[in-house]
Length: 125
Image (cartoon, helix red, strand yellow):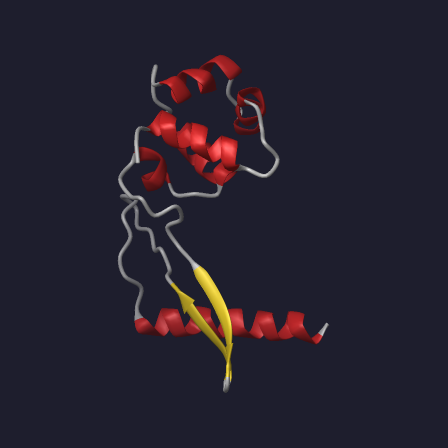
């Protein structure tokens, strides 16, 4: 779907609050000129900037870099089923070099149980 700049511009324009380049720059801790240059392809954000942009736009760095067309790296979907809440989710694990491994079935069940408990708690309110 295009370059890093194309993706940044698209994400910014599609946000509900319609931020200006300056708004994104301030929110991520960079100057408007620096951010504008990223959008037009004159330079690329460093590691810290990618992290800030991913956080701001709530997307994966892989998406920003064009390594994936999947907007988010993890997902959570809860649906009602006959026997309660059914969860469909993926967990991104990280090791010291930044690459994840598939989590164990035990870890997946543990996380699923925590999410179900929290959803049940919120439902009761």
